[in-house]
Length: 147
Image 1 (cartoon, rainbow, N blue to C red):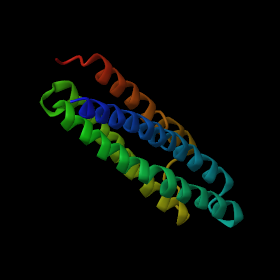
Image 2 (tube, one colour):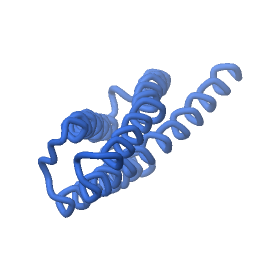
Image 3 (tube, rainbow, N blue to C red):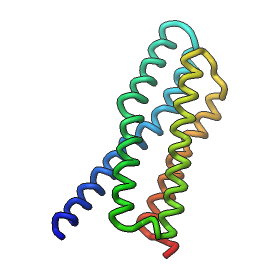
Image 4 (cartoon, helix red, strand yellow):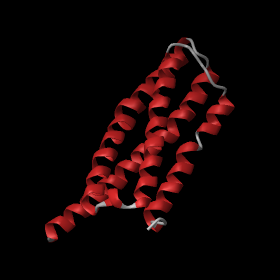
């Protein structure tokens, strides 16, 4: 039983670590987009920003997303979270963040092709999505308000 207990703690630690990596990337990428657009969608700076965005997605965001989901689902199965209402709300918010992640990746591809679809102001506002969502997730996980 102690082995399962230790495994649970390692799963939890890994999950939290990779959530931090993922969230850092989700905060950085829209800010990169703002700077990218302000520097222009052609020339040397366009190439530099495109490279930065690609690296952030490839090295941090995509791997973190996968590990967060794998460890999160393992934790949920370990504690029987699928039967707990607070977890359903958390899962919905994580799905929202995952959709946001995919949307950011799509926006990056558009920028790389020279298409800025949103203003810098709109991107700055969208940059609040991960922070608000993370705050709600933390409240759900710590307080477990629905039983």
